[in-house]
Length: 98
Image (cartoon, rainbow, N blue to C red; front, side, top):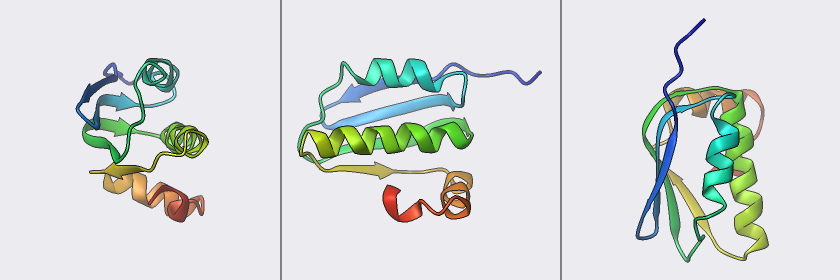
């Protein structure tokens, strides 16, 4: 069984910093933690410190996009891992994320 590094989300100004593994085992806790963070104008969600992803990462991103749309706030995803870009292309959702 692969070792999973716990994921974390922390806010600095208008930036949400995501770290660790954003995989099926950590996505529910990240989503729950993110509900306490405000989406303000020009919120950026930064994946620079993410160590691993899987297809559940796409679901998490789409959930954040839905929330931002509901709250009428634009959000931007930055420093997305290359393998996430490949997955979004594979599943045909790249245009929804960028």
